[in-house]
Amino acid sequence: MNGQELVSSSPRHPRIASDANHFVLTFENNRFASELFGQFDQNLKLLEQRLHIDARARGNSVVITGDVLATNQARRTLDYLYEKLQKGGSVERSDVEGAIRMAVAADDQLTLPTMEKKAKLTMAQISTRKKTIIARTPTQDAYMRALERSEMVFGVGPAGTGKTYLAVAHAAQLLERGAVEKIILSRPAVEAGERLGFLPGDMKEKVDPYLRPLYDALYDMIPGDKVERAITAGVIEIAPLAFMRGRTLANAAIILDEAQNTTAMQMKMFLTRLGENSRMIITGDPSQIDLPRGVKSGLVEALHLLNEVEGISITRFKDIDVVRHPLVGRIVKAYDATYVAANEEASQQD
Image (tube, rainbow, N blue to C red; front, side, top):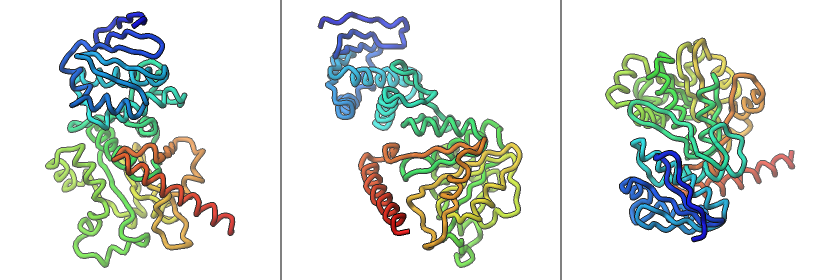
């Protein structure tokens, strides 16, 4: 190789030898290097697939060949993941996918405060006692920072983008910090009319099936016994949307999930419950509205009316932000294309 050897001034970073389309990264810790490359070099193979490069392991080094832009993205990805291992973290397939997305986004010149273009990757994170969550896409990164910055945040977009999961994680973090005194979970139940009286059991038993995704996220962030105690003590409250009227919610992290199924009046009622020292997070997917024909979604209206209101942040996720199985992202994209076409046809008929 004709490239010049570049040695990092910090032992935390790999040594790099390079030429125009060729990188050789050498990692000092053999165990971390092995974990970084993955079993049977599966993480390097993922880099090859996503960035269209060639990445070959040689002991604790990796030789990367390909387009200049792509090889630099691969270097930043591996550098970030290696530091993650040094800090005691692990590297799963989803971590590799996320780091690649962020590296590519940096070169797409996205205006994110979390990127140092063509340099080191840094990603927003949410930490609770049980789990630390790191952004896997640029939109997740922007969303997580909006949650820290704004009193009211809308997270809208397709399923699988992490908008609800991250909202619950942020609420759990606020509770652990002592920044709020309680978490309130709400969601339109059954149909838009919320005919809860026809279901058996007490109020919690009536709405539990509809709040299961929120519960699942809570148990990921907080030990199960503490969740149960918090629910019993009212520190975590299940509040069906129909029963929110007339309340002022102070010192709380309040989450409204599946907000696309609220009516305009329900949404206005919910948003005006915000009290002193509270944070409100509204999540939903405007392409999955289950309201009766002719009934306008409160979420759609709120996104239009509140777009420029100071203190409110709106994060819009897309199919490229889906962090589940890659096939899910392709399914969402196919459905969204049909949804957009149907809306355009309806507009033309009007």
